[in-house]
Length: 289
Image (cartoon, rainbow, N blue to C red; front, side):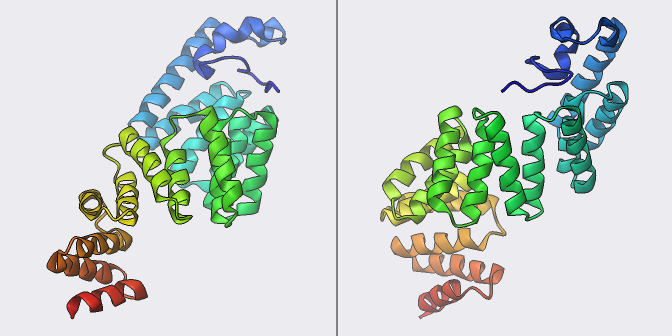
């Protein structure tokens, strides 16, 4: 179903507002003037540049001006909501998303935005409703299926979560986050070979991201490949120094590779980070003997 609104059918959203004017069924008097189109385009581009460099304060200023100049644009409201969400201004973000949906009840991106907001606030049922509504309107939205998968995974509905992630990957095969979640679930289900193949993909897509390296290290450990596990886990430990699970798994890999002294160091560091963790304490005591 095609969503309606000021910018429906424009591939470049606000950047193409002027070019879409002829496709609208509105009266000519409601079409933006040439000067308005230039201003909207400038504000949109400046906001996007700020978002790209993570200057959300500047992006917010530009989008607030854009909303003032184009008050009937659901796209502008949605983009402002997204920036407010990234700033942690959740009430304002929710209001902006709701305004986008008032202007365009079928604005799928705003529905997904509201779902992500509810997910962040811990309202899993409400989040799932939003993602389901978005998928009903546009089944081709890979991010909605992936978001639905996250909620289902957190709820312990693993088979349904995997189905949602696989659907997301059908639509967007290069999604590193969906690949990673599928692999994590496969590893947890005792399928390390399948998990490792997907962790390899995730690492190839984001070679500097420590999370895929950590997870691949876990898979190597499960497959009794301690040397490979150590390489990945040391990489992850340098970049995730406050993660006790990383150091715990590194200790296990070092122990499996008969590096007892190094294993004890890693286990003790993990215990410092998580003094109440029974498994880490047990491993540390074992290595101290």
